[in-house]
Image (cartoon, rainbow, N blue to C red; front, side, top):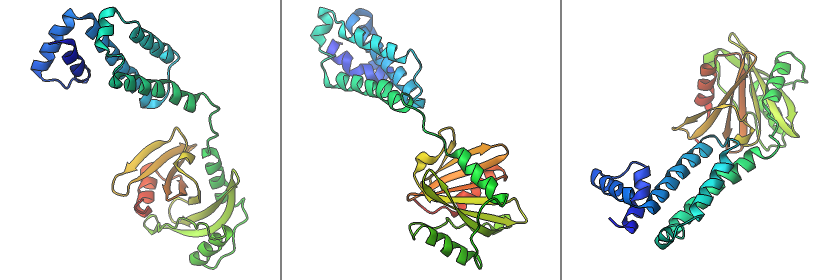
Length: 267
């Protein structure tokens, strides 16, 4: 096996995708070739560091130093290594550019700036105020009139995310308009024989979910559900075409999640 053939197999070797014959031939070549051993080591380190960074975008302090060492090692080629031209190949150049983006640029974008303020405390505060009667509630004659009046409060841009929670023995009882960061939030309180529940509806994106929230993807409806808790209260956030709904209650999380999934439409 020559060096050109070995270079083609190194990626598969690192990913454990070679046949027994290919692996055996490459291992024989690597015992005799310093240049290909160096290429194999760089590929392995690149895979390991990229997976670490991409897994959580939580770069450790030594991650940039590791990449810097890796790049320095790649640039210090012996005459024999230079003859292989592996560093000048499009595949290796692409691999290192990708590594730079993942290991340096993304951690900077996500962790090199001031963290965005989580909206979760405001969600729970609205819930507590609503259940405590500390809001100005809209006078309405029944649930349909309540929905109409709340929609009017947004000039028709969006309406409350309506839920049939009769299975939980809950019905919409009253509604109000609140605000989070300059955005109107429609608040509907559900009451009945079961645990009280509030539904907050506003315009936004999945980025409004807390970063620490747990993510559940519904493959049937193709919707992300974000779950998070605070002092005995549970919350489920999901996004339907730019309209965010947050269900909050002291109900068990699984029960609350199932209620959110049952109503959510296909994205």
